[in-house]
Image (cartoon, rainbow, N blue to C red):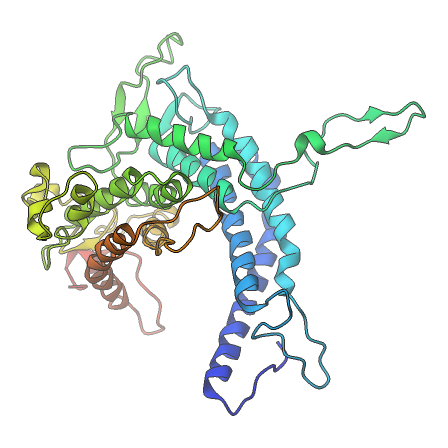
Length: 425
């Protein structure tokens, strides 16, 4: 990137370096876009398709936010000063990729949404249409989070391909590629409705265990022999970290799209359950975050202890409930033995990514999109911030544990004996 700053000012040099770093990584994103085997993914499971949706809608939103923040339309942004020998630009070059990113997100969303089925299990997304029915947590959480992300961040798409299957012909025989019926604009209420319905089904599906954690999903017993069976009655009790994470960004988005505080309450409760399940006892993460739930339903003393609900009076989990780690360190079941696949090695990162999204500050002064999204009262925004701040010590504890597994070349161990021996403590 050409020099655009007064190099005598240290802060400007730091901004320049940060912008160069952003452009370096964005080049990798565009390379991945053109290299992604998107035709093959169309034949995979619905969760594979929904990962594509979330990834590209997030990329498009990042480009939009970064450009609007640092490259103002008036040409007065901090990266737009005219310099001798260089022609300044009024917008970030990455904006040219927004239509492509948005279109791919839309293509895969419309492929994936066909996985919703009302007949089996009373609703929910099916994992893989080519296998026996399986209504699992990750596919449904991805559908919820992708749907609300499309509502909040999809910039619109006028690209007919690959949706236009036929041509209409004028009297002169010329083909007419009319895209009107295929256009989808911003803040399409269909996306919001899908997210609301999806979470309502998931919340009432019985897919959480006694620790309040999401298990992997439901099969239908005997379906192979009798396709008339429709009840999800065979639950897979396996608990994975990412099944507790993906829904968090969806809940944050659902609150902003509806103003319904219940979504934030559910998110904070799930985070607390995860922390409990790691055996974290160094501090009480419940005084404020559990106050979050209670304060929305009753008016009482400002003392945090009085807000703890009856079901959660004992903040110290028993050792038998530590199914997501030990000594406060988040782990998969396969981590201590070092048997996690490359797929499983990414799960904890997914959890923390969506935790970060959930804990982003709530808009207060005005909605992001007046008439389509909501802003939070100051009390709610403050309580959300305080609750998330209480999780910070646990997050730092996990980050330090990961850093202590570095090898001589600086690489991080992805699990194995380090967790079992408590070396991250």
